[in-house]
Image 1 (cartoon, one colour):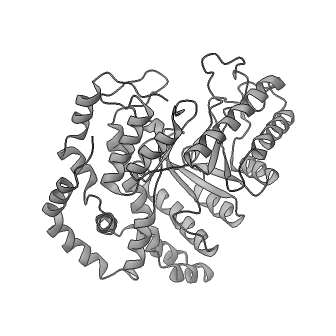
Image 2 (cartoon, rainbow, N blue to C red):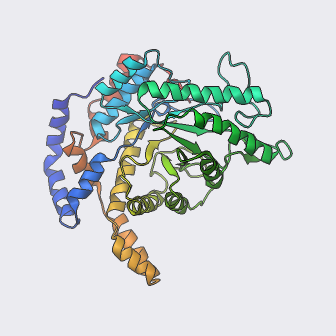
Image 3 (cartoon, helix red, strand yellow):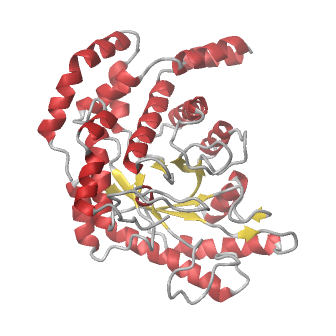
Length: 424
């Protein structure tokens, strides 16, 4: 299914008068409003191929109708999202779930939808069909050199697939670790993992980046070999200038100060990118901003300040991606909500009076520092986000358009009610 431009324009026109009034009122109080709008227009959030189907839990999977059955259909679904919000201009693939039979044709199809390929992701946390060695006791950390070599070879193959598609980065997430005391020699596991990562790093093209993702727990519960940002940062430093830490917002213990983490990683030049989601308990992978939108804003405030201090391009110098597993929502509706929440938090951060905030900090005026931050956070920036979207051909209200055009119903009609997307 494709969104007809004339239909999108008709629906935008119906909402134009109300939007114009709200936007003009807000714009009067925003300094450098055109600069803010340009940054919002440029900011893109990659969509992972595995988020396009109804995700699973440890207890079951409740598949929805019209799920994408092939890589081509996944690209078409991201194209639908991008047509509506003009902020989902990239797709991130997971190998081997998404190995293209014809990379040139897949690359051309993505281009037709205005999409590029974001980071490619390796998978050594599952055993694949006909795989000679099991990852039950780890992959890059495994005591058996043959298992480690299998995992290394897989990552190098993922790089080759990414080169064919025009990607420029590899994300490595390891489920390696231990579930019981005494199971693992921590130092040996760290060293084996480092040596394995070095071989993968050596295979990176000169203009590529490696993102080392960390997670505090799960699937191993006593130790994770890359369990926190400090371990990931250590690996990245030891590997070299093309290696960076990747932050997944759900990969932390409760109450972790993620905004402080990103600030320090930016200061050290080792923050590579983000996987956005939200959580109540751990790695819940809930809709972005559904649980703690204020924390999301605080994180963006540190991101904007840190990137500006280093002269970085907000849109291109870090990797931005949603990483969620949808269970009870229509996945495309969930992704529309998540992208909107990210753009809102980013817009709010752009409105922070940084000079006033820094003055309050330097004078230890705690009350005023809070007032400055919350003044930006409590600003309803949705008209700004909508105006930026409208100027580049998107929908004023993407979710409303999605529903009014019965997109899911049409996808079910095209693909069937019992389709199951590959991946999680």
